[in-house]
Length: 128
Image (cartoon, rainbow, N blue to C red):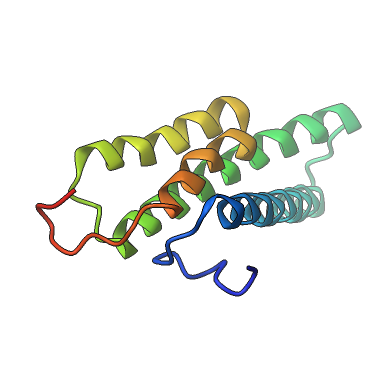
C-alpha cells in the first residue's frame, strides 16, 4: 500500500488514493514548515527582524505558495505519467488542484491529485 507512493503512473483504488492523499499532505506540510523556517531564519540573519505575528503570517504565506506549487506539480506529473496531458478535462482537474490549494491549501489541492491517481494509463493521446 505504501510502496507505490512515488509511482505517479500507478492506478490506485480508493484506499490507496486516501493513503496517497494523507502521505503527500504530510510531505507538503512538513516541507512548508521547513521552507518557512529556513526562509525566515535566513531573513533574520540578513538583518530583517520580525515580530512573532509577522513571522507567523509570512510563514503561512510561504506555506500556501508551497502548497499551490506542490499540488500543481503533483497533478501535472500524474497527467504526464498517465499520458493524459492532452485531455482538456483532466488538465482542468489539474488546474483545479492549484485553485483549491490557493483557497484551502494542501488539504483541498490534493483532492484532485488523489482523483487523478485513480485513473488508468491512457494508451493513446486521442483516447479517453
